[in-house]
Amino acid sequence: MCCTGASSFAKTDARKLPFPRSLGMFAIALGLILSPSPGADALGASPFFAKLQERLVADGLEAQFVQTLYDNPLVKLEPEILAANLKRSEAVLNYDQFLTPTAVGRAARYVEQHRSALEGAQRRNGVPPGVIVAILMVETSLGEQTGRFPIFNVLSTMAVGDDPQVQTLVLESLSPEDRKQQTDEVISQRLERRIARGYQELKAFLEYARRNQVDPLAVRGSSEGAIGIPQFLPSNIGLYGKDGDGDGTVDLFKHDDAIASVASFLDMHQWRQAHGAKAKKRVLLHYNRSKYYVDTVYALAKRLKNRAVAENGSQQRRAEAASPGQAESISAIPPSPQH
Image (cartoon, rainbow, N blue to C red; front, side, top):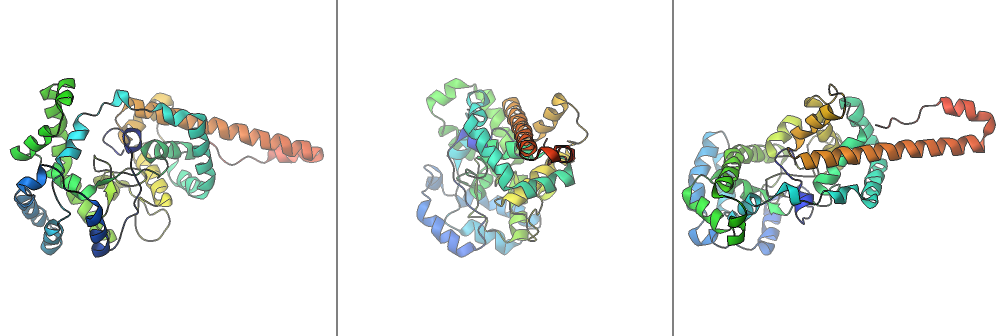
């Protein structure tokens, strides 16, 4: 995900939900399917979020907007989600699934289906279609699994994670076995990193939702707070998010916008200036700091390139065989750019 760690698809089962644009209807619908988090409701969410609301308003968000959100019964602490992130290990994630013939075939079909958007992104940003598609495959299985967690609750919980009571709830959500697998110091460091970015991501998410008329309570994403097909953190949407389909909004649950946004991100991190595998992989590390992730994305992109080159060669040979007299002129026509 952009840019915290493992992809949501590699680590968890999830489902896609487009950005809803009606507060009331989706709030009611979600109220029917969301169950309370054990432990969090016993203490009540309001005491934890009171100061958070004041801070958001002081930072420029409309008071009525903030209060309405936190008064909604769907809003609650999610210590179990935060705790689940603390026990994740990159080394045990299944990245091999993205390099199987089936996965490569799916990715190749996606390239054909979205060729116009991919080639447009390549012209603007210099990022090959295969690299963009490889990222989308590893992040969310090409948009099929964009996350199942309520982003507003996840980020709100992170934002108040410096409260000792909240930290206690998070640690209590870890099983004894989880606590044995890593030291308290490692757990504490991981928690501190999430707390440090929680407030800024929450604020960025709410600002984005207001600009694009998105219902914050209906958006689902990863347990890290990442959103959409490319799994951008909210703070990165404003920096790198692009309106790929020209409808006036940035909606990362739309493929054209997701493709344009990934290309924008890599371009802004000097993709075109990076030469050779090592340099390209260093750029990819800005998207996700996992070496396993980067190696997988690079390997999948390379397989897509090789597949495209082979298919182009095969098509040209068939054309030459069908029309021997035109072989020279056909050969002179360059194939569609493949990288």
